[in-house]
Image 1 (tube, rainbow, N blue to C red):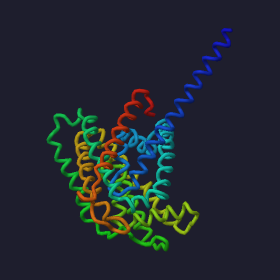
Image 2 (cartoon, rainbow, N blue to C red; image 1 turned 180 degrees about the horizontal axis):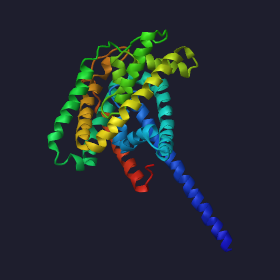
Image 3 (cartoon, rainbow, N blue to C red; image 1 turned 45 degrees about the vertical axis):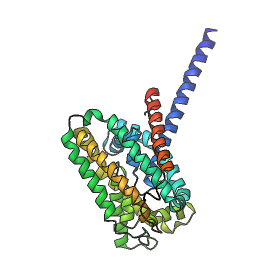
Length: 319
């Protein structure tokens, strides 16, 4: 009888452990999914999602550890990034196959959602980081710098309609160009507020890369060389930028957070101008095209994500 009870307890512990592992996969998969949706939209950054959901520091540390960490740190980072990556891949495939057409046909509704998303998330971030922000008000200059960075990047966008260049026929110069732009774009994608997709638009590669991914998913391998070069540039960019971001968060957190808040405020302007960067360029978001319903939907999404974050912290499902 004692042996039976003991076996039941062991089985219960195993079941609870399995449930916890499944929950961690689902939670981090959902995080990656949300990041991918944001990364695919000009004006929005996956880094913003990571910051809002409270795992930005862990995300940056994991990327750093996978490159510079010891064996134990590297294995832990790989486990976390695989969970995150599965959700990201699913989200990016969905965005490429379905949401790109939605952005074209309902761009003003989508822009209104993301305006609510960013505007409502900023107070949550200030509340989350109030310890490092309080008493360091002179660092608000970094917020102003952040706003100006995004404003200037968006304002001086030279690409009309974002149709960009033809990456189907590669030359040495075009290959180098794709590599360098990929490095710059991924550096932006891991920073809250700066949209890597917007930078791809500025350099004329957003539509070509999205179309190349779409063609690849339809088993057209014409663009594989370009995608390979782009991917290599992404990896190189991560190696170069991640250590810098990690050091900034550890040694100059107040200044860095003020800068991030500025980048996010600046991204509001980038979202307003988002319709002008489509393949068939449209007018910027205005009072007549702005949707209060979809704006409130964006606010509600952030509120829901904050609730999810609170539940995760309570259940200790952060790894």
